[in-house]
Length: 60
Image: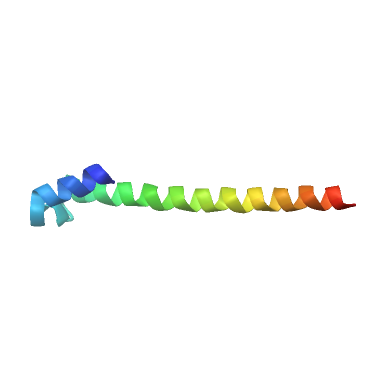
């Protein structure tokens, strides 16, 4: 994402054109960033659920 942001700034207005390679790379980088964030949240929720289950078994 840092590289594509720098490339977009370097290209100025041309970096935002939908026909340009920089714009496509920026969209792909942002999509990966969003997906990675969603995966991280999902892993956190699973870990929390497993931890809760483990602590419930210990209380019985």
